Length: 133
Image 1 (tube, rainbow, N blue to C red):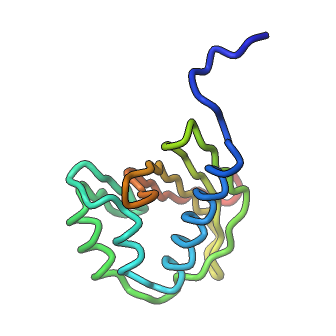
Image 2: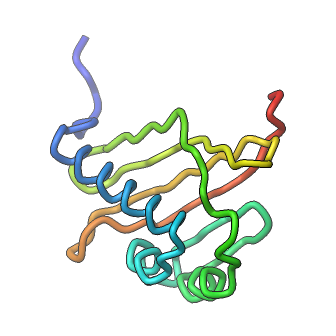
């Protein structure tokens, strides 16, 4: 059966680039490197981040949240990470995570777009669910 998809999924070189950006984000998140986190989110009013307890609309709100956030208890363990690229310039990354002392399961998703300055997150979502689900 011939594919009707007008783009290629998971081109190896593109997937490697996005995985590297994703891993850079994870290191910056868990070590509270706010300047790297700011770099990896697109500096635009259209960028959104829906967090576990906050809805942040626009890069300025995201930056303010990062600056004001406590640097404690940021370490986590990722599992079930799935990164999928569509063509050469768009990708999604989804992962689950756990934290010491937290019984709930965390979930995170990113939409990544390649711009002239590199891969940037244009939308992010973080949520928690009961571990038994």
